[in-house]
Length: 326
Image 1 (cartoon, rainbow, N blue to C red):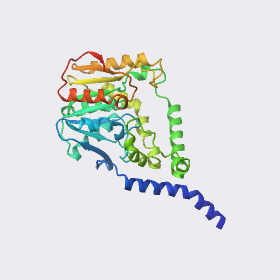
Image 2: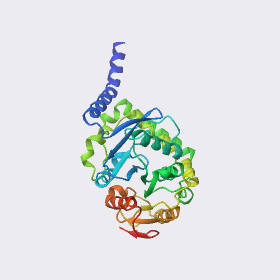
Image 3: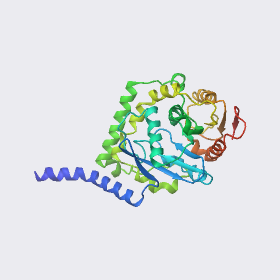
């Protein structure tokens, strides 16, 4: 019996150390911003600046408020700007509802309302968040003053990019991978292996301690899957959404000629064509290709995103309907 108790204690120790480490890090490096309860779940919202209009930064899948920190401080010099964490990512607790585009846009609406943020908003949506922005315009058109899509996903990519269709086998595989990650983190094995250090994007090194506090939290290892599993449903909802009329709209796309991009060469012309077609969503739209950027334009070329936000926030000043390089 004594041997069994010792064995259990040894096995439990890494898990306990992981929990204590997380608690200590969160105490020493609290995330900036505030928390508001939305549908029974605390959500994280970080707003700075104080001039109209208010800009809302919505990250792509698997990312959170940190991905915008080369953009948000600069935009805040001239207007109010908020980044936030969708439920199940960053510092917002895991969701209790389906995480498709309709529910996610509703959650954002409630979050901003509860926090007292006043519309109209300029929505800046990266990657899959483009689906959520289109749904937000459909549900709350009076709250949106303009749109900036940052290498946004498009519903058409599912049919046009090979391998993008829904696959039950792929979903099962991703869930198995997430469960294995949960086991690694919950057991403390990831901590022992030294895998609890963030892989920060270039230029975000000063946020290292805040990023580290987000690592190896077992409760979040599976929570993001709810949103990822709904990608195809969200695409259908975005395709059916009434967006975007004559709203000032800017499409910022990655550079299809960037040799350092991780996007396969065979996909680049398809993606480039899909990005061009996004302009048809609004009668007041234009497109910018951010030179030397990959999918994370806000990291590779934050200046292009900042400039685009400023243009759209000023009621879309400039020539619309064109495609340019920056």
